[in-house]
Image (cartoon, helix red, strand yellow):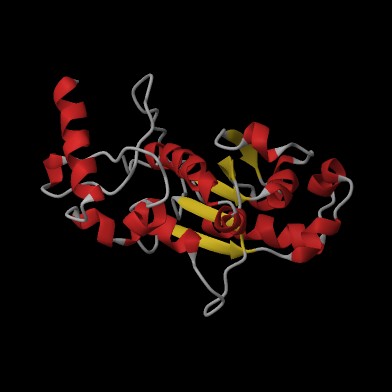
Amino acid sequence: MDQQFKKIIQKTKAWNQGLEPLAHTFEGALFKDSAWPFAFDDSIGVEATTPVAPKASAPVKTAAPAGTLSLVLFVGDSWNEGSGEDLLGKMIQAMKLRPGEFNRVKFNEELENVNDLTKNLVEPTIETKEVLEAINKFKPQIVVSLGATVTNILLGKREKLSGIHGQFFDKSTGTAANSSNYQLMPIFHPDFLIINPNMKRTAWIDLQKVMERVGKI
């Protein structure tokens, strides 16, 4: 353990002096304002690029459900080509997800008009159906819901994101004809993280849990 901390201290000094190659990567730019230690994995011959939170126990990995087409589906995406910083895209790269292992579903503003969340899962609006159909189409192991609106739609109840982010919920699309089981993981929306950069660390810790589940850590 002492050797590990010594190594982190050495790497931190190199980072501050601008000698650490990681500082010039997209992961480095993503977390440059975060007061958080970086882990370095010599087993792959280069510095690992993901900051890690202290772990109390070994990672819990779950087998992908039968019929899984993609590992992770991100729902509630608001980024458009040429519209500015694609923070979610940078995070996906840092998660080591390759093309074909993830998909992104755009946020539909009409979802904000759903009032009865419980009834909406039984009698979904057109916009909710689009989300459920995307889950059925890609059959992901994990759905990452971006922000409170999409999270509440998929949970079927209103929850404070600050109290449930980073937790896993066993869910199903609920359509008998073409049902898909998945685990739901809510995180703060990338737009919120851009406005509140101090929350990037929190979102990254949550996404690391996803990485553990899908075997990327």
